[in-house]
Image (cartoon, rainbow, N blue to C red):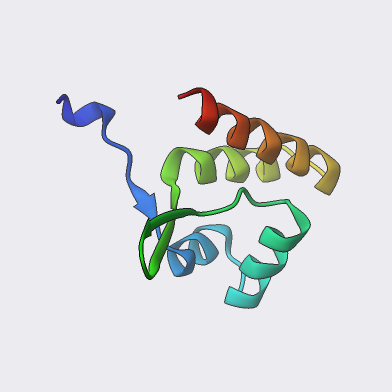
Length: 83
């Protein structure tokens, strides 16, 4: 397998740090749909594909509002199913 195709997963604390929000802010964004849901990495671990978080960050930098972020997150989740 080509190492450039490997996806790095970010744990919840890492996502919060990347977005500059608190851990409770992370859970608030998950609940309101402005952050894509995490993926189970095992019995007691979850993570987010790093490219998805990068897309959310880029949307925030562009000035996306919550409605636009929710739409992006729906697209990202749909793309997971298609992969």
